[in-house]
Image 1 (tube, helix red, strand yellow):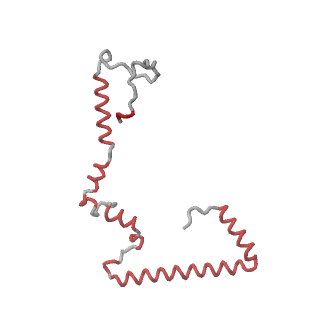
Image 2 (cartoon, helix red, strand yellow):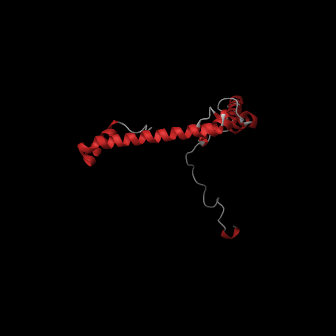
Image 3 (cartoon, helix red, strand yellow):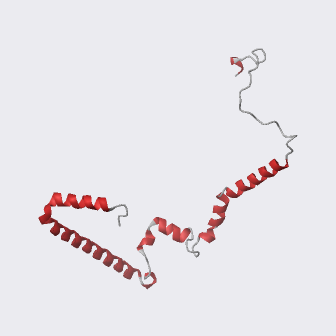
Length: 148
């Protein structure tokens, strides 16, 4: 129910409960809480059975967890078990069309082929990132603010 609650948290809650309620009242409070939880579970189970009986025999295997939106979409639209409407909608085709891996692999293969076919003697000189000497001021064009 609470997967993130570990032993240190439970010990802290137990110490806090003993400090707040005292050792004399604590067993009575625990019994009342357990009884309340049992009543809520019984009420929930009876409500579920009543809804199933009202829906009729065609919904006898109906699960309330299927009403959760994520579960509903996964089961009925995205075709989690193979017989939903996901195949009819062509969702697999859409997923394949939106996946860029195939196109990227084709581009990478084309670049590799071109790189392998080029002759190193006729290839362009390698690009360096080192700064080169700046051209002289006379070789540069003057900036004209009115030209913009």
